[in-house]
Length: 348
Ligand code: ATP
Image 1: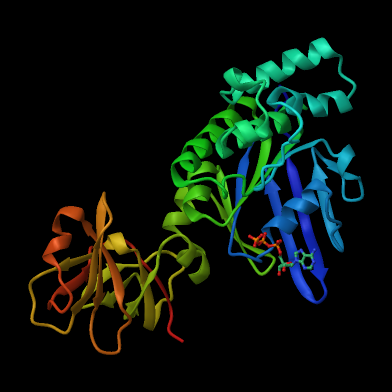
Image 2 (image 1 turned 90 degrees about the vertical axis):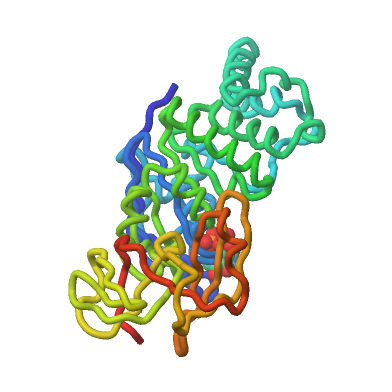
């Protein structure tokens, strides 16, 4: 099994009729690392992956894999395994034949191919389905075959472009965990493109958040979650409530209470404090200005939308599902931060 090699993208630029799809992207992947590129539609994630794959030529910048400059090397000489969102199996071939396809191109003998494809299909849990065609398999199974096919050639790098997007939620979470297990087992350096925050945090060693063709932050999931570099990253990792407050340096006054501030927060004066729904509490007490707008039961938890007062944006508060029914639209309530660190940005 191939172990990972380092990947280095340096100052990649790519323009499409005036749009900067990549605007000086620099990104390093350690050998064997799984990096997820996360960002909204159009931020350049796929273009970055396609430049690494050799499916797209950057206008400028460098692509290096294992210390070799591959910038002008054609795709078929780059030794990369790829899985895309759309199921890309050959419909006239069985699962086994799909996996053997790349090996055949590499002139492996039939005995060797058969052994390798059996091994790969076992790795992805499909030993019982080797003779099935795409139309006889579920979406999740087809993506497993695509993964087995990508890994069969022992690629230097594995590229996954939204491989789970077309699957339903349950299969999606299962296959996400499976991909991670398999990737750790084979040790192939992997770039995983997604617009799904939870998916990126769950699967990656490090997550790179992109916007407008640039990398805003590259950090381990825990780090990204607890110390987002800026406003945009914060929003992307769930710091969704924006409440006006006053910063005093290490703390800020917000909703009548003091909250500790994350490093990188605006230090003095009027600020907007970004707080997660799970870091606010709502109680029935109070004759204040806060009013419940709506409440919803979501199974494991509940959500209450509150208008905290005149001139303040509505906020979303996560509550235990058992108490959701206590909150009805129009109720006067009190909303408070629970004391978890928040990010403050200068008020516009
Ligand atoms: P999505 O999640 O929607 O796929 P993305 O983050 O992967 O988005 P890219 O597909 O890399 O973004 O596209 C980045 C920008 O470049 C977008 O504005 C897109 O419209 C543009 N773009 C990408 N490919 C082409 C192309 N072949 N021709 C013209 N414009 C393109």
